[in-house]
Image 1: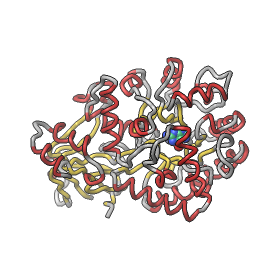
Image 2: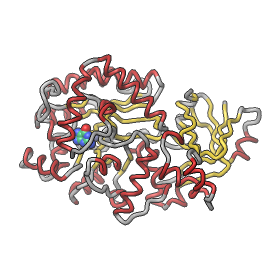
Image 3: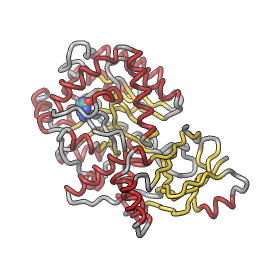
Image 4: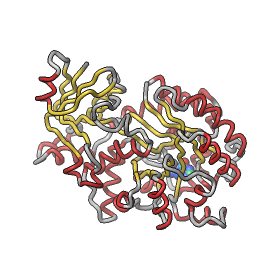
Length: 427
Ligand code: GUN
Ligand code: ZN
């Protein structure tokens, strides 16, 4: 058993529904008690210290302890091309992404990048990711193995594409079904892993492939399904020309059995009213990727509107369309996008999206994303004075949220002092 003592943040409700003050608990002298990799108590240090006497205490002064970040949409194979200049989505895919993804037919390369990516994620305080792989099954094995060796919770799946992608980066409807099926048997529900059936997006799958993956999902309903939706206006026009009978972009998934409550739709920026209604009706999740949306020039996600419509939402870096590995930087950009839309998101909204919201999107909210009794102890300690610029602002804070917000806006991996994966401190 061990106790971590610091300022602590936990959620007892959804800040988008009941307001930050009724949903978030920020305890200036809080504590978490961990036993056998699980959180067994959370509360004031005063109570916890007395309840578990003679238990070792790690005290982090000027730190915030909270759940590890959950990054609900990344492409680990794009680690090597993050921050590539000058292109919008389709050109960016063709110029930078596809040539890099081609390299993942080599298992050694896949293993190297998977390990490098997960270490970078952990360095930035991210303890769980949902990652796209490439069309190569080796790329899927590599990331599940790398997560397993770090005991990290992970969601991942083989990215399926059978058109509008270069030679060497296309499968077929049947191969996508067969390979994904084999990988589900190998990785889904093994240890801390979840398999996500992963059609990249409608432009790179034929109707036959979308139908095959819809059938596979129906046969494996406990799997997640992740894809992209309505990221850029050119992309939406392209989808309309490829699927002339579809009512809208979401319909290209719905028609083929790829809309459901375990579906996770990345970006979801330029949605039509019918799409919003359908996502809410089926209980699907959308994922906000703010640094990607500004970097590739996609648009302004409507976090407040979509949450008000009853849609589950998570937060993500979208590495390497996103320009950073840090969920702190991602929260900062989510805040800025909110401001551009006229909504000043409270830090509780931002932390909630990066932890509980993303965990809900991945259907892992009973396991991770919060400091709560029974949760797996994936925890981080964030230094609230990690640079001179942040420290001088922290020193002037009048209340606890003001003490946290400068780190949220200006912090990065230098703010992550420690992390615990299932209760074990990462060295
Ligand atoms: N749409 C389809 N593929 C991708 C991708 O790799 N990154 C982003 N940002 N959007 C996509
Ligand atoms: Zn993406």
